[in-house]
Length: 113
Length: 111
Image (cartoon, rainbow over all chains, first blue to last red; front, side):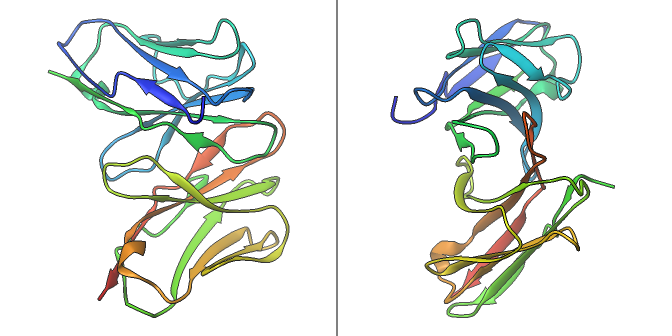
């Protein structure tokens, strides 16, 4: 596609529920990133895929968070047993090669009530 | 020490002035450096990238990199009210490494 697409744009869920956030990167981009951004903060790294594999998942805060990218394109970030502290904007970005700039989607605003 | 550090601001400059935004990073092996602009409620948008020591100019924007001092800056000439945003510095350590962001500097251009 022309840009990085994230769905849904907004998600409200109850504490304890499971959510999935989807990212469709720019066509042909091999690198895909997930970040989380809280109000007034810079993007916080969660996980980075190179192709289908997670090259670096050191930013996932705990085992409730998991992400997949089974075919090297679309990625899904999965959050189990959501907590109010998970409320944030979840940003996805993709890039075309090593050391090149990342382009961001519009984000998914997750609110856990 | 944070991997990428920026002064959170706000940095206030009058319209038409030069705005200078600064960033330091801790990983001496860092290879790629990016400046993103983020308007309130929007996603970050890339405005500049720099890989080599020295200056890189693009229109009203100049990125400056000093690897010896582990310092990267962004200058905005002839600042406009539309430049008011948060500016994020981002660093990549090369290879298949994550891009790490600073917390951003909020810039306010006063008409």
